[in-house]
Amino acid sequence: MLHPIARVLVLASVVVLSGIAGGASAGDLERGKALHDTFCVGCHGASVYTRQDRVANTYGEILQQVARWQGNTQRRWSQQDIESVADYLAVQFYKAPN
Ligand code: HEC
Image (cartoon, rainbow, N blue to C red):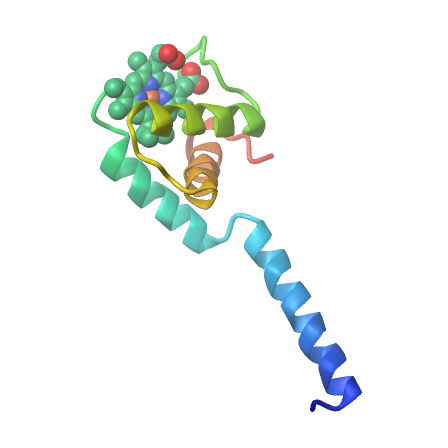
């Protein structure tokens, strides 16, 4: 049995760690780039994300488009992978990180 103060400390560090995981970490961005560069460059280059009349502008819209395209192409990505790719596109091309 942990000392009560030790239990509080353990809980606090779990909260801090999950807080970090909720944002876009460097690891998420790297995974997003790897997934994107492997599966998403067959039809279009990055110019589709920066064209004048692009479909997505907010982070929510980017997320929707990534979900849509991984579905269209039968990738069956997890929600986490979808978010990693959306994070990567948002930061790298859309400049819309939120
Ligand atoms: C089969 C060809 C094809 C593949 C593979 C493909 N896309 Fe696309 N994608 C398109 C076309 C065509 C458009 C533009 C027309 C449209 O929006 O319907 C597009 C548009 C997009 C847009 C919207 C760009 C904007 O206007 O803001 C995003 C984001 C996107 N694709 C992401 C992805 C991702 C992520 C993957 C990998 C899972 C992917 N695409 C794979 C064909 C493809």
